[in-house]
Length: 120
Picture 1 (cartoon, helix red, strand yellow):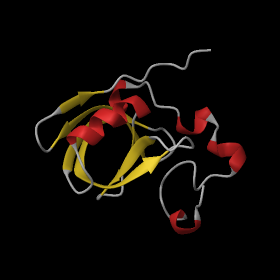
Picture 2 (picture 1 turned 180 degrees about the horizontal axis):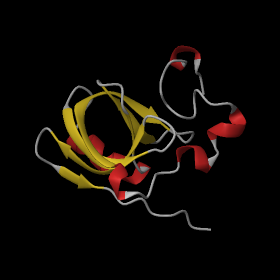
Picture 3 (picture 1 turned 45 degrees about the vertical axis):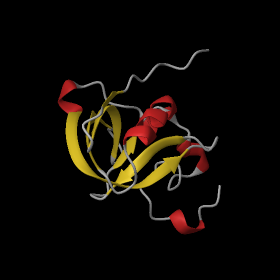
Picture 4 (picture 1 turned 120 degrees about the vertical axis):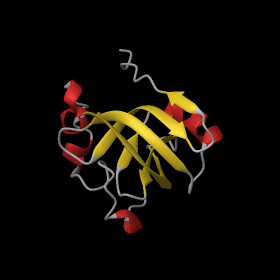
């Protein structure tokens, strides 16, 4: 992955040393109900995982939003870069990251996102 022009992005994997970037504890969502929040903003940039799947985006208020790659397909059908969205989700305990549980798009579409545990 070319990170030359992405050094200042808040994406958790870019700015972390390699031994921390894939540490699940560093970006694990909080389970405390008080950590559930809602934020609004315009999508400014899509974020991709190592498999080139969209797994999040940046908002114009500098918040980073993570979503399951399966939900990204639905998001890309309902919202585009530059459009306003309202995100409900769980705040990360350690970084400025919101794990999306639902996204309401400018056109009124509502995406409910389920984070399924990885199968072993």
